[in-house]
Length: 302
Image (cartoon, rainbow, N blue to C red):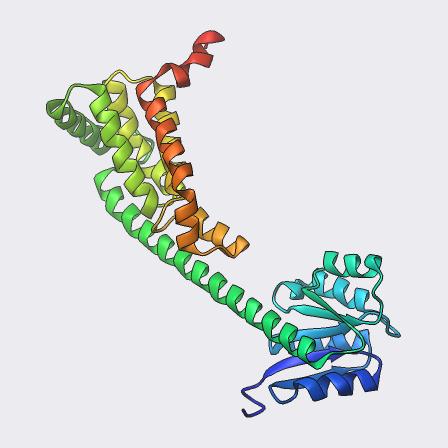
């Protein structure tokens, strides 16, 4: 593998012997960059941080120690993208605990064991690479969601002209839709059931803010014509939107949770099934038992 293709590892250690030992263990697979103290290490991170895949960092060094380097990396948020393995003969729990608190990924004690060093370096670089790929997937998914949301907003905006909620076209659309719904069924619970299904589907593809801005002015007047309490209708809408944010295929919160925890999407969906069942049961209770949403207001004289 050519030097241009090799991933780069920065070794920050004031001991030339230690740097040489680590370089000898790793230079077959990685390009090694060396710094003899913390200040040099920070300078190299500032200059070449985007190229560096891993930092092997000593604790005790002149000018700036390893903890100082970690502080700078944390302040500049480099620690989020560049993993750090602490290398030191200091095995006291206070040193190790402080290192982990400052963002260290792993700890290797001296004297070095070639197999342990190699395995931990490979595992750490692979882990961060997977996290970056997942973060990019989430970013792409959020971008696609935003594009779909924009498209749906454009489409729905032609259906519902929402200026101040009182435009002539808006009133005409609401009246027409209300008449159609009443012709289909005068039963308010049939309308609520239809609305739940509609909002759950929209919630999987459309952001919550878009639903509140575009669909509430459409659904709310129809619900009022059915004689549904305004508190109940708003609670049902908000609950639907919340469920939609957590459900596949486009649930934004689902992707955020998987990104932060490292959980696979299929595992998240599988483990969430009981949770979704409970949420749907609660939604049905809010829909068909109005006192659950209006009881407190009635009790306190609202």
